[in-house]
Length: 377
View 1 (tube, rainbow, N blue to C red):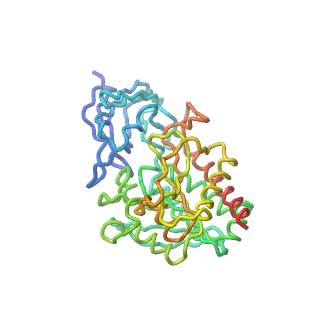
View 2: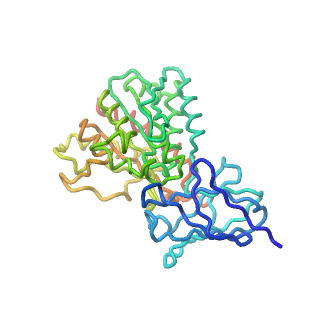
View 3: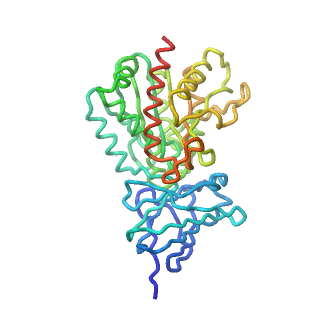
């Protein structure tokens, strides 16, 4: 008799429901975010799998948050939880089901929508950065589950730069980007770090939604609020994370802001701006277009061919972070999006878009910021 594989999710960011298991085959479904219809993030462990060809079918994806995210997508997989590769995956659009095929070398394999970034790793990241020269840490506030909203401050300049990530917790690539950014910013032997910290005061919030991250949510916090739709009128009862972050921005003002995200469908890294905000001037908007042009020239990981449609004049959604910050502070603000899929310009069949890509793009973004500041004078 062949033993069934075992599937578990009772860990940080775990998310899958088991419908049935037959030997090395399983039928699965993604659990919705709490008090929400959003579902797309999954993360689970398969054990008892050594040398057995796995066939893992995730069903009911027609009503996932972004069905366009599944075609041409391959699941991430790891056996050591350090190196994340891609497992051959195929999507049956008619059935609304994705099948993952993988044969592990060892007894345990971990599968996820993107390489997870755990809260333990987050705490390590924050603690290590806070020990570096010239870096201070503060708690902006607490979440509904009473987790701290960590902020790292550094620099002596009069230009306040805000970098924040993971409003949507299942977009774990955003915190990998943050790890790359902090690698640069805490290294005073790096001329990019020295220049930015001389000219700017930087405020770095690596994870805006630790509750959703731990709960295995795609897009919402503990009570089902999509934080990136709460920026116009945030409340302590529904979105304390946004309220704390926006209040902190009110105290400092904002010169430049980048909100870091991931996109399910578009196989590229790109920027979204603030075209539709009220009273937008050519001078204000030029801050965004010039930065985008600099980053496009500097980074092979970034492109401008693919991206979101722009809002018509005066039609921006001011409940979103980038538009609210650009309007509220007359700041140069932007949303950086990175793919769950592969990068269409520079595909990597082994890893697709990876944590390593996220960190490298962060280095490029900070280099572009130095050049952008120099151009502004």
